[in-house]
Image 1: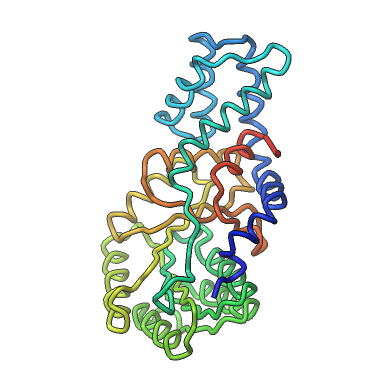
Image 2: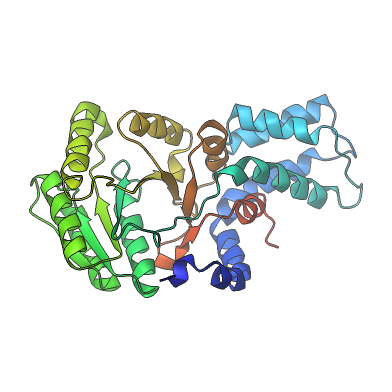
Amino acid sequence: MIWGLFDKKKAATEDAAERKGLFDGLRKSSAKLAESVTSVFTKEKLDAAELSELEDALIASDMGAPAAHRIAQALADKRFGKENGGREAREALAAEVAAILRPREAHLDLTSPPKPRIVLVIGVNGSGKTTTLGKLSKLLGDAGAKVVIGAADTFRAAAIEQLQVWAQRSGAAFVASTQGADAAGVAFETVKQARDADADVALIDTAGRLQNKTELMAELAKIVRVMRKIDEDAPHETLLVLDATVGQNALSQVESFRSVTDITGLVMTKLDGTAKGGVLVALAQRHAIPIHFVGVGEKAEDLKPFDADAFSRALVGLDG
């Protein structure tokens, strides 16, 4: 079965709408960056002072010093027209940003065997982790997939309640226990129910208490261990959800979680609420981890498959 969410032919027909939605969501991120970049290009060719100013503008957008330097050096030898230099500069900037992001672009394929595909969702509390899982469930359900949700973040009662609402919206089966219950037990029951029901996907939420990394590591290790009693390859995907509004702190979160567990893909949320969406570029520059989705709003359809070219153009204020 090929669900609509993963149907590339269908996705291509919706490309224009996707790009507009991304541009609208990233408007806050792009406005300041576009203004800064356009003001730098006052000559056909950048001099040393303007290159330094460009690097500063890129760093201020949270792209990080390595990516900012790489992009500025790539633009150093380019020439731009006097009349339309600002537009040309943004086109060139978008191309250089896309060159960094494109190797990380990877659509999440949950249609391939084994069945069910077991997806563990991790991230610090407050990153949008639970909401992202709910949105993914809704998108999968709407596309015809049979989904089971497991509320294994038993540390927060609110997370359990929130996921129950998303399960009802998406028509997914829901597995939960009480606050403080054994998270691994919830994960085990989720995988068992998904297999018994011949579900396509099992989505499992987890706690994200990085202030006690030892405890978190032990809990995640136990979750994986008990799931492998049913499926020795579980989890098939481990998605780390990051909040764009924390800026460079997202980099340290990746490092922290990589020390705890394997990460197969990233989801960047809250790109509609920050003026520093460039942190995704910094992440792509530093970590060779696939980027699957970006979140640019509250609705389920605002969780968009990551498109490096569309994101790069939206980030610098180009909507076409």
